Amino acid sequence: MIKSNLDQLISDMHQSALKVLISKVPEGEFDADYRDELEASQEQTMSKWFGLGKELFPPSEMLTSEELNLISDKFEKLWAAYSFYADFPKGLPAKCRYELMREYLNHSCQYRPRGWKQCFTFCDYEPENCPFGREYCPCKDLDTLFDSLHDDSTHLQ
Ligand SMILES: [Zn+2]
Image (tube, rainbow, N blue to C red; front, side, top):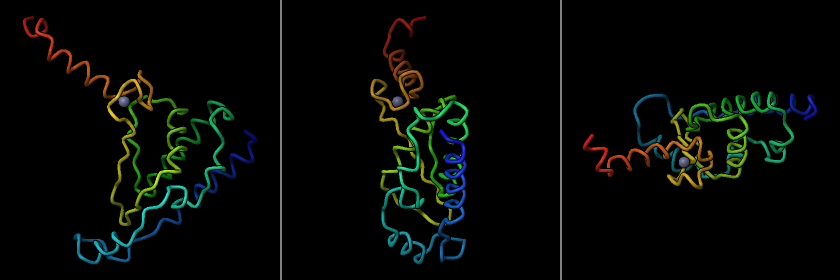
């Protein structure tokens, strides 16, 4: 990708992180005012929350591995600024992290002011269809565990 375009995108992501809405309710106990504020907060796409259109984010094929490392790290920081947390398995390649976060620009969700963390897990416990790919699917280990629990020979050892 042309370096100036990438620099521009990263600068736009920084700007977006600075625009995060702050709760009108003072920090403290969960109270009725905050509940009202939450209820008034509509769901909209992440793209809308960020103010960044998906077209600004190039398809992963257009990026070098260094660019993918850089942009996926910046992307996770942008998510964190909005209290969105991506539950990626350890060691998941930058390309996969970037592609998933890019897809999620079209995902509708609520933004919760005051830093209430929202965790996105991606994996639907189907290793074969896992967005992380079978190698990185965390539930594959659960399957193995499940199999071993049901394998009598394991119990007898
Ligand atoms: Zn999975």
